[in-house]
Image (cartoon, rainbow, N blue to C red; front, side, top):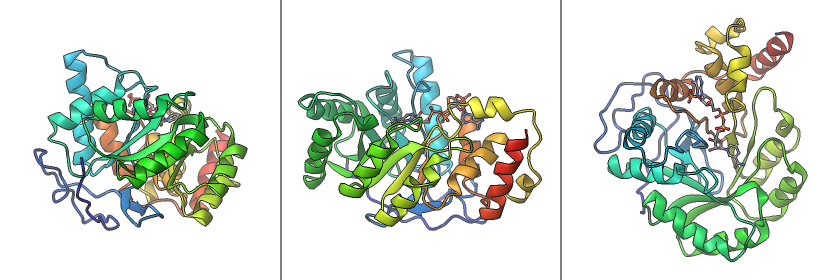
Length: 306
Ligand SMILES: NC(=O)c1ccc[n+]([C@@H]2O[C@H](COP(=O)([O-])OP(=O)(O)OC[C@H]3O[C@@H](n4cnc5c(N)ncnc54)[C@H](OP(=O)(O)O)[C@@H]3O)[C@@H](O)[C@H]2O)c1
């Protein structure tokens, strides 16, 4: 499906999502998430998106499908756009497709998925399956998952982009794997997006990949902002740094997310969640002030002492 695009300006505390809610969703007064530009086009994206690994792998259970759709509805109502999935994530793609249809295909949705196969010939088939599962004609972003057979799949995805079956092309990694290879791809290939792991403890991308993304004009999606929830478990119950209140972080998840999205190279972080309160809280983190470079250092130093 071809969505018409809105340009959402930088959010302010005074702004509301009331004018941004897709048809069929209730309007609410809530601060807008901040946005960043996709360098290759200038299109803006809210700085927090939604992951789907495990969280939306709910099979055919009607109650769980409805519960997932409620989380996705809350995501859009809070001003979110980008949802990330993969053929690797069980039934998550089908769950997202179910939710999009149930919500009347919100105009603001930004679909991000992946090709995940070592077989060159399976790539186009997998793309068609993915598109069908999302119940969309056009995918916004298709990424090569974990650099798997990346040469063949990037070529195929670039052809699909030229034919306007997809709007953006990208490549992903996680857990700090193959950063050297990723750097070479970022240097040599014409890609719109890169996706990698970055969080307060996994900060290696700060050295080379994040600055390179800025130099090369590549948008950055951050996966595992909470290290699959382990960072939240590790720090909950521990004192927040004093600067947390200055940037409106009420708890550890908000502080951890604000740390990630305050890096200037980051376009969109994609925490996954099964919970409506958590999705709202995550989007709220993107709506208030973010730590500046001094505050970011304070957060790192504080965490090192815990
Ligand atoms: N190679 C790749 O391409 C790759 C690799 C890894 C991940 N990814 C993508 O990145 C996404 C995010 O990574 P991830 O799912 O591994 O981990 P994550 O987003 O770092 O952590 C997810 C966990 O955080 C919890 N959580 C989320 N928001 C919370 C909040 N406000 N308060 C408390 N707990 C909260 C969730 O539990 P609740 O359900 O209880 O909220 C969930 O267990 C994935 O879902 C996937 O889309 C891509």
